[in-house]
Image 1 (spheres, rainbow, N blue to C red):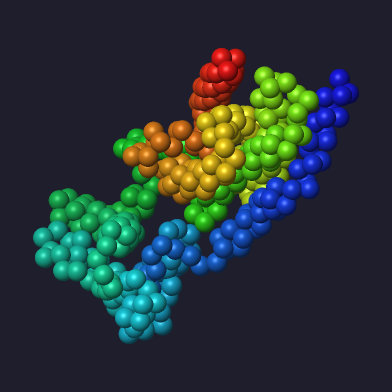
Image 2 (image 1 turned 180 degrees about the vertical axis):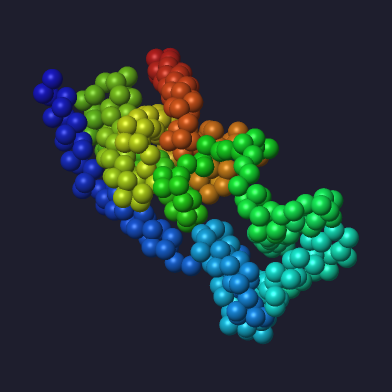
Length: 380
């Protein structure tokens, strides 16, 4: 029992003499730290500058403050005046400007009144028309709905119930205190897990996927180390039929080391789920990565050819796996790579089962390739 343990300990010690392995290990905390700093900065795919014609208007101020306080894909900033906001758009400092008029409350009442001609009252100035800016206008409409709905409600009540003996304040109080338990939609996603209930910053959200790809990259690097050792005769005393187990051990040790650092990084970044859930997911993922790398080694026996495929597999995993975006169109291809299962397994127990099935499928393919190779060797 001591001999295998000592052998594994020596293999583990050898890893830390490899510059590539140490680099990958150090890159994990650096990656988490860098993304954590970036998440604290102002960021966004779309930049919108807000302005008021009347800085003392309470409704405009409340709306603008709500936009400025939220963290989303849209970066909101405040301009001192409408002219400054327009200048920001013209100079390229912002993609659009939203300018709120004087006496917003009165403008909303005019717009929401039954029978009104619906004159627009918020100016939206954009550099160009695109899908992202169309979506931001939907966000603006949704924010205004809370105000216009109350006005419409009061106007409807006054128009259709002429004898109603309630003040506007009493009507609004009734509006605010009546709750409807039924929901029209219940929308969820396996990636919509939030540890603090505030909504994760979208810059921090890809950390799990990026770390998953780094673990896979580490497994591939460890596979190259083994192939180099095999070529140099390090494992010459091991029977050919048993070398598959040696290669699996070499890759597994490297992946487990990186997985341990990843587990720590997840908790430090604040995106980790329950400890047991993370531990089980990482162990299963380490096994899947090991099997994936060994299968690739069976397919690409040439060392240079295997090394040349590594960038392709890393890029493919970043594109097809749900690291940054979860696209249905690429789901089938994404499930060929281990990161897809790990990213989802943290939030779905079903994917832990899928990881076991994926591991079984990879193992079966490895056995098939090994059997075919041994059979070919025997014929020779």
